[in-house]
Length: 162
Image 1 (cartoon, helix red, strand yellow):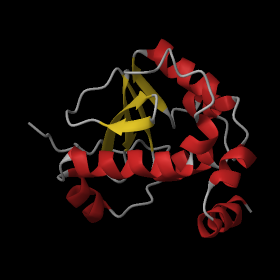
Image 2 (cartoon, one colour; image 1 turned 90 degrees about the horizontal axis):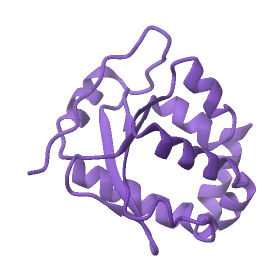
Image 3 (cartoon, one colour; image 1 turned 90 degrees about the vertical axis):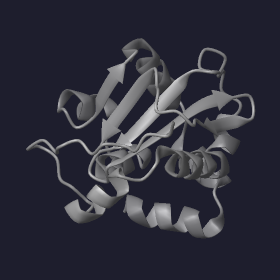
Image 4 (cartoon, one colour; image 1 turned 180 degrees about the horizontal axis):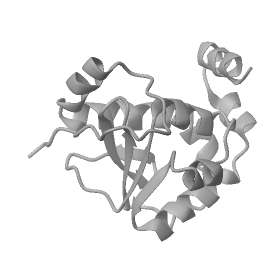
């Protein structure tokens, strides 16, 4: 059974990017389409520069990224070929933040520890697994990921950094 993602109320210290009405609609959609899109985007944009990391400890583990202001949850696992979407809404560790905070993390404009301690990033479930992921990704240079992206997307990301 494919379960819809459930929106989580915003706390007072976060700023929503998505309108509440849009988040309500997105939160009612099945998780699989979002998981397929998210995994596909990660594989296309980030996997070329991430594939050489030692993923052995993470292969087959189940993750969730919850964009709370959009009401979207994506479920995926790591394989030798990249990120694989998951059909069921089960994860060993869930990372929750707003779209803006995830973007700031991805662009290295904000440190994950700062977001975590300021309660803008929530790690639920197997926190040791979450910290393993965080530490692995901290070692990746944004420039390496940008170099693997198609030109127009790379230009957009570089503009967002400014």
